Length: 149
Image (tube, rainbow, N blue to C red; front, top):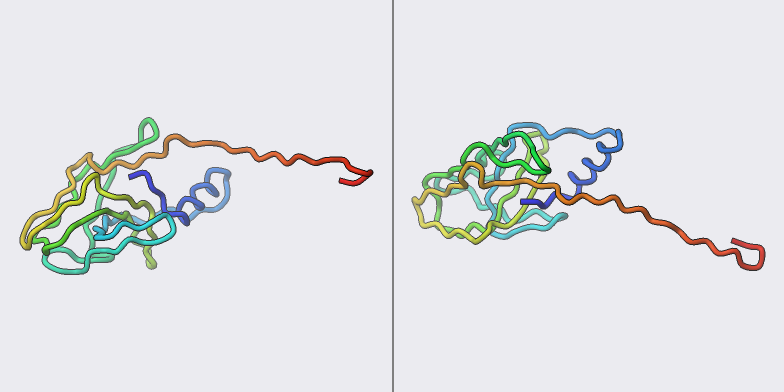
């Protein structure tokens, strides 16, 4: 999962040059999506049903320390008694008073569950990466024409 929410991405850019940034509030929740979002649009979260509680009740996830530009979950994300559905992606949200979406992405392959099934993302299987990072420098070319810029 290497897709950053655009607002969160902007905050990380600001922080990287010393500007203010509000860090995510833990715990981080892992919301299950039936339709995958984009960097500017949330996916369609699975509605509360069976053993899944949408929104701030979604399962929590923690991560091992970052290394080599990535980090992996260090706990399994498990939902028992799932409703009958197909999960196509996940989103990571913080737990602030107004929760913020941080990361989003599709599953490697959609997972269909029957009513009562257990859905699990194994520990270490949810990976966040920020590689490669690029520094873009934009140059403007000015022309001196008729004694004017």
